[in-house]
Image (cartoon, rainbow, N blue to C red):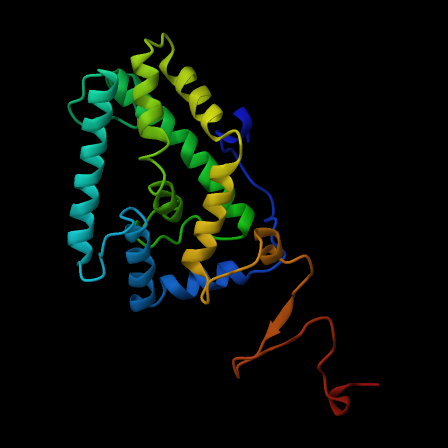
Length: 238
């Protein structure tokens, strides 16, 4: 990574020595009811104190869309930055107006941070619950939880401050906003809370496991110890 964590380039092995989180993620995303429960939980996190239990996924998407539009209007009024709509071309960054450029730059930083947390925990960026079909679907799921409080206000502030270098100034502003590490800790806790049942109660480091937990899968659903020979003595040629 570069820029103190707001640029994601590549990763090696996970910090976790257990596949517990990855297995939980794969199991949840592979069962419709469990996937729906995680997706609903992700939407509920955007609306604390509101009852969203009886809303359909379509209704939740509409409610989220309205929330984001309201955020854009509020920050436009707060900063005096003109706002029309979200408009960007992934292949041509400069084609957007200043606020859309700032939003794209800020979101890219957040994506790098979230992607780094996901792979550090040993989860899969591609196994999304709300988003699907993309190699970073889960990353988009998690990043969307923080845009309203991190990247949207940062982008509007960068434009309001009459930045002469929107991409660079916005990246530095996101860096400064997340520099204390609070968003990293929160992101890790949210991922574990969404994927693990029952809910984890220990510290993040405890759940990463500080020991090798390599085992062998058995068709009876149990796990047996690895690192030993299971041949029957009668099967061995002397």
